[in-house]
Length: 497
Image 1 (cartoon, rainbow, N blue to C red):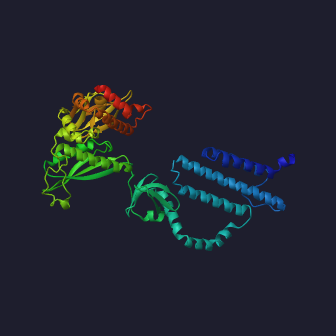
Image 2: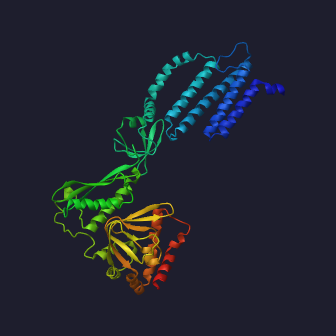
Image 3: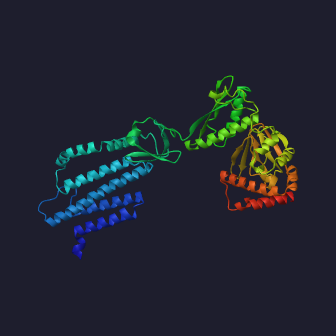
């Protein structure tokens, strides 16, 4: 038994088995620990072989038996394999320290491939005593044939290596190619780069095509992205007044960045229209579509609030000159009635009920910087913004956070009016603000005449509260308090119906 234990081949085999089990299985998902273990076993294996007179990096000695030569060859192969694994572990850990994306592994795989090729050639030279130089020379013809056969694939591979070294883009960047292909980079490999379009379609672009294409990286040098919109108004007022209205529209946005500061400029002026260009930035290219939609909505609302009329496109301007200026679909209703028509909360009211409620609404104005309502205060009226911008901020123990900005057509105070709840945040005027106020007295008359309105308001208020909580990411476990039956019960209790 002692002879078996001290046998060099048994020791080498046992050490190799234990090392493979620990580094390749137990530490497979721990690169740093695996590197330490791999280097430890490699050093131990080297010391063991040298102790028994086996030099892995020298050809075999003559005078040994066939069985000894076989075992020595196996020991050398194990040593060279562990040497390759140790180098590969160093490469993997080095790239992890550099924090490279896991998908971008072209250079890493190339280095690993070179290590494996070197290990194989070393085994051929020092284990089988074959002339490596002659073998490489005689395989030149085969390499030429394979190169010609794999010309397209090799072009993609080397283009991928070049792109990886130059790093014109990374995982998560939005690219626009010269052939109008646009998408987000989700993977790069030896052959191709994978892009996901805005329609969630996958486009696989060969690296050779990508290397030749004119490429625009929308995410570089910064993640923020600039957006430009063009709007046209009829020349019914001064262009400077139009610029101020559009600046208010940009200021009331909740999707665009404050820095760099949004801008508005006049790009053309003629007898039919004033054309303005709105420029702003979003934090990421993926938010550009949402921001455009919000800005167009705000432009429409601010334009309606200030009496600006959108102009037709240049090619149809002549045909539209005869159109009446009162083409607005609101008809001839008063301002309070138009505001009620635009609010989903009162969509269930009849025309007569809306007219009755509109007749009770009161117009109020607030100066820039004035506080409309403090956080936690209970409003006994609902405020509908006619013009201007207000911001809702919430104060906690450590900071003040701006939650949302409201523009013409938005409203606040519905929780206090209908349920007696306090305001979620402080409401402050960012510009001169005009609001129309719906009081509890004005609404009480309608509820007394038709108590079923309470059920309709409770349902509408529940949906609005749920949408607000999702947008503000303020869901809590007690969201049952926002359910329609509970809100309806609170409305009936508050108005005593």
